[in-house]
Every structure is written in structure tokens, then in C-alpha cells.
Image 1 (cartoon, one colour):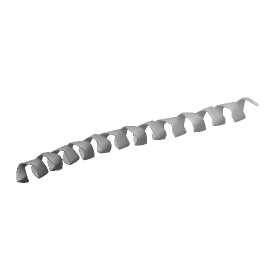
Image 2 (image 1 turned 180 degrees about the horizontal axis):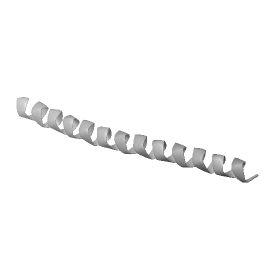
Image 3 (image 1 turned 90 degrees about the vertical axis):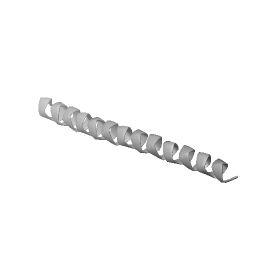
Image 4 (image 1 turned 90 degrees about the horizontal axis):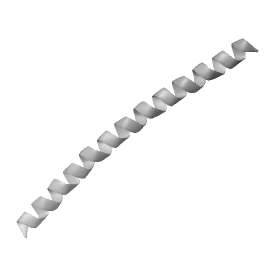
Length: 48
């Protein structure tokens, strides 16, 4: 019974690592998306 709990605990730790990696990727994507959007707005405003 104890081994089952250890296996489940390991799986939760793996899932936590995967979710952390996904969150970091989403944060980077959001940062770059915001930067590109602001750059595009500035370029459009300067051209008009």
C-alpha cells in the first residue's frame, strides 16, 4: 500500500514539473506577444 502512495506521489511531482514548464512557456509567449503588439501600435501611430 505504501508503494502505491509513493508511485502516486512521484506522478504528482512529475505533473508539477510539467505544469511549471508549461507556465514558463506561456509567460514567455505572453511577454513576446505584448512586446510585438506594442511595437506594432507604435509603428502604426508614427506612420499616421
